[in-house]
Each structure stands twice: as C-alpha cells, then as structure tokens.
Length: 135
Length: 134
Image (cartoon, rainbow over all chains, first blue to last red; front, side, top):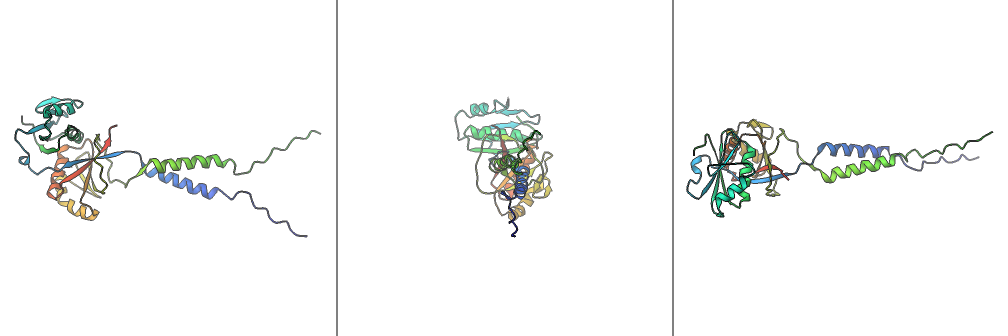
C-alpha cells in the first residue's frame, strides 16, 4: 500500500550553530583586550627653557638621568615624591610646579612627577627638558 | 537462554548540549568583559599612573617607542620632526586632540621634544595614556 512517511529527526542539526559560535568565540578571544588605560592631560611646553616661570612662586621637580628625583633640590624616593611636593608647596595652590627632565630621564618618572603635582592640587604644571641639572 | 537488555540508544545531540552551554558562556564573557582596540603599529609598555582625565572626544594617537622614535599612523619619525608632520596627521584623522602612548622607558626628553613640536603645531594640551596602577 502506501509508503510510510519518512520520520524527521527530532532535533535539527546543531553543527552549523556550533561552528558559528566557535568562530565568534575565537574572534573575540583574539581581539579583546582587558587592559584598563587612563588619560593624563598635560599642557604642552613652550619650545625654550626661557619660557618657564623662574620667580620664587615655583616648586621645581628635577628628573635626573640616573632615575632619581629631586624636589626643591632635595633628593626624594619614588614613594615620598607626593609628600615632598605637598611639603614644598606648603598649602599654596597658586604656585607653579616646574618639572625639568634631564637628558636620560624616563617617561615613567615624568608621569609620576606630573601626577604628584596634580594630586597635590596644583593647577599650573610646567614642563621642560634640560641637558644637565643646574642647582 | 539469558536475555540481556539492549543498551538504550542516546539521542546523538544530547552530549553536545553542555559544550554549547560552556561555549556560549565564554562568548558572552569575552563580549562583556573585553574592549576592542584598533591594532597598534608598535608595542609599548605604558607607564603606570593614578589620575584619569576622562574625555569622550576621540584623539589621534601617537606612539613613542622605547628608543625615542615617534609613530604617526604608519610612519616613523624622529621626535624633532614630529611637530612638522603632526598637522597633516591630525587633518587625516579628523581631530584636534592628540593622545600619546609613550613607553614607560622612553626618554622623557624625546617626549618633551614631541610635546614642544605639538605646541608649535597649535596643540595646547595632550593626553598621555597610562595604565591603572591599582
């Protein structure tokens, strides 16, 4: 008599779905980054050192070639930088902090100095590069 | 004669279900937890910092390598010349905001030379990218 109708499988094939999901997974695994970056705004310096304020209302941070840092000519440790800047300011936020980077100093030290000045509450942060530390 | 029960046939897709669950979970994790960034011309180790000046305007990003060379897009230039080339680069990128990704071991004088060049090109402020120290 009649042929029995062909029974369809209960589940449709999952293989293409799994293929696509795996592709997506591998794509996101390769392209995503988990590093959280921050932004630090810095005013660009004028071309010459003469452009910096040289009067008494300045706290100077020196970044030395050997990696050390000086605040108002006194050597400070990396951990003590923030406290030293605060002490040198003595609560006067209208002062300018000038950061002088000696030839050979590194970007990490520069960022630390800018942040120390900003965290101390200073609005004016000036920067300049110099060849050699002049006390 | 002893008759054994025939082992029950499992549906063929049943074993795949936990696998699909895990893969979906991983997919959703990477979708939510990660962020996508454009590919970089050079690898730089960012300096660590605490301050985050949030800014929604997209900047054009310059890279400062460990050896002091500056990358504008796909071009590498010494820091002294970067100021001259940055105007064209900013026009190309369609922004007046500049972000610098500087290596933590890059010479600070190269960074300052670059920033002086940017000042000459009319950029008053730049943002340095740092990595969260926390």
